Amino acid sequence: MTWEILNILAVSAFAFSGAIVALNERYDIFGTFILGIATPFAGGIIRNIALDVPVVHVWEQGYLLYVAFGTIAVVYFFPKTWVLSWDRWNIYPDAVGLSAFALQGASFAIAHNFPLGGVIFAAILTGVGGGVTRDVLAQRRPMVLHQEIYAVWALMAGLLIGVGIIDVQSAAQTYFLFFLVITCRVLSYHLGWHLRFRDLYRL
Image (tube, rainbow, N blue to C red; front, side, top):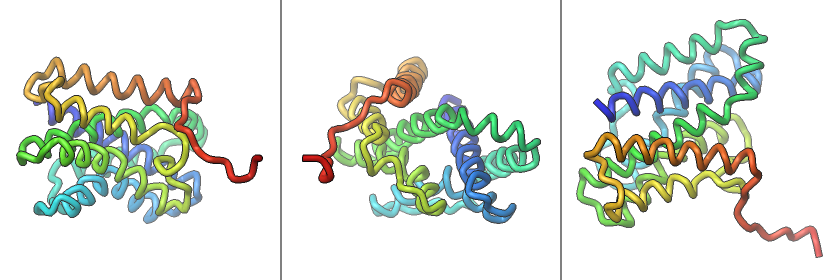
């Protein structure tokens, strides 16, 4: 039940984020649905390909596909003023999707008996893969590739699960980590935390 709820939250959050970005980039209805569908499901596909396990295709996602379609439809057909207002809060659904998918990726790796490195790798790929795909399709610079802290929180989730500090069989511990990652992501955004980068244009 815990993972069903997290999956629904993650798919809905990333579908919402993808649709908002598509509308900002003036995509038509087809492009909006494509970007909205790619965002929640691309991370899991990339993870499975990288880890050499069977890929669950988009059309095999069952009710989660309908959750994504419903979310995108709501975003697309609601009044423009509402959508513009939602865009200012896009960091929050993005943080929800990042957290839920990072936990899902780590749990997936644990279930397949991957070592610590595989658990962390799966958490990062699943957590950030959809966002990177969204940004690339929208011709934006993926946030995970520059100084804003994003993938680090997925890495943290994978590490805590991989070393056994968080037991994904415990609903309480899973939800604790879920909200912890969201909190860290939101704080890093609002407080301007960033990783060190080298500025070649300053002496």
